[in-house]
Image (cartoon, rainbow, N blue to C red):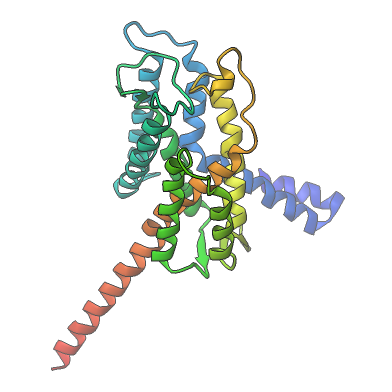
Length: 290
């Protein structure tokens, strides 16, 4: 369909512009496909207020639905069990942050509805909102054939992630270091490029810019989610109000944590496995030679 559209448009605009429009449309489709988990979850969130199942609270419906979506993604091989393990790790990271932020002494936000599946102040479905970020990155990695160049030393990147995560907790007791940490991100990933393929030509962009763009779209999704009552900030208690754009910086920093975890799965571990396999093959060759 897109190819026939490209030919039709090329007669009017020329082949170069038509190819650009075609690539842009394919990019949009692939991005939509990468958002299969997050998009499905937002859809359920929107319709859940209109779905009434006797004995099942809305937040519990979302929790069970998120598990069902995950099972379907594995069944149709859009994700594998190792990727699910990574999502579960990010689920736990998100839950720990949620427990702290919603605690009575902090109350950065709250969940106004009842849930059977919960831990203290946090319904269990909330962890899937964090896991959906990692799911998007993993799907994009596959669909867009991502590769990373000039990636900083992995231990340093992990150390920066640990500092970012710690700041989400410590900023309530000491000065908020999000902007110094953002500056560290620019310094550490300043040369790092993410390469991707939409149709045939490989494109590239600064990795730090991708962090910002993903953070922006998560902020948009957050406004949609809070509108449908996923959670509630203090300024939204009387009536819904937009979440301020300063939250984009928080989401950008959280994306970095998710990206590093996924990068370990997609880049670091496969390379290590390849090196181990290569060493084993070399050892076998030496033994045969003897």
